[in-house]
Length: 588
Image (cartoon, rainbow, N blue to C red):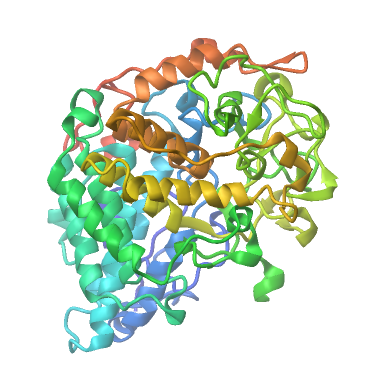
């Protein structure tokens, strides 16, 4: 029997891609390890033929789950180059501006649809959707048992997750479902923004109504609480408008959608999930799948799971620190602006946080400023231990290109060095999970919705102060960052005087709590603050200097254009495949 297969690493149109049998049950290797597949009479190993697929929907569900972590540094599903680097949280890093194709995404002025990273990410997300569609097709003519209904709900959750990524990146995309013919796929235009958001929500709603409650058997799998959290996330982003600044922000808030955020976060609030006691533990492998982790992409090291390569987190493979890891390529470099955002005055955020822009923090030295303790869990700085370990104290030598990207490094997504390293030379691999939804993020969504409903000093204030209380506990005598406790100061908020004050506190809390976790660009877009925030950032960041070394000079060429840069351009390859069926995003 001939198998209809596809070269996974090549480019394909939606017609070819979404109708091919993309059913490999277990992908434990990264994409560069795959070779091209050709149509022949030999049954490929690790593939499911049509007959087996229809009789084994559980294997197709496994294949759909496998796509959650089947990404690569040039198409990371955690979207760190877009959520962090395209915002004011970090610089690209690496050996220079031409190292990878991401540089235009951080300055915008040279951003065009010709970026291969856009083509790869679009393609790979639709490959993931194809896996989901195939799984759903396998359940069409089977008895509607409780098991089948649950599997269908899991796959709809996964499909909505991948479509949400596409929507966040490209505004309006085609929605391809199970059972569509080649002709239907060829003729499918992009759904409008509102249609797409409603369809994604419908998928998550089905999942919410049919998934099991969270429990010991749902680790790494979709469940009711995760669906509720995702519904809250969708409604929150949709409530503010379509993302373009002219139609987005506080003056456009839809109170009906905001109420939905409150309803679904109530489900999360009353679930088994909770704040992890210690902030720094959230980003240690020993605490993977803790009460903080509502839904996360599961990763592992080869030493943990007994495989050749492990189920590595290849999306973050470039983000290891130079000189600490054998293959630390020094990407994802925190900005000076982000470091400054952790400054406090009387324990609270400073309105003039970027004054004295180039003030640096040195371990054990007197500092002009005090800082929110979460700085020392988020940003690696010369003179401080890397991820709390004295034997791996950072120096200025741990930056690869300091005259371009400075001396800071990212710590959250990378494990402690003492745990050993897992890599296939010349590529670094990390086994740390990727959070999709963590409890604190969802509670901040709830606080934001409550503020928009007018609850300034009730539960919204309580949530923000609970989160700050956890950070405050991190400077006790037994803290992971005890070496920095004298440089920290954090206080709780009293009553907010106005809705604007509450909004400002909420925005600040989201930034320092979730820094370098891929949220910042999308948060600023929801609030309608991208152009004002980023153009101010470009002006200040181009004056960066660390201990006499200037860097970030390339920001002199940067400018964010409202009405254009809120979304990224659809890749030329994808536009060309459909011969005029799609429309390009505004301004490109």
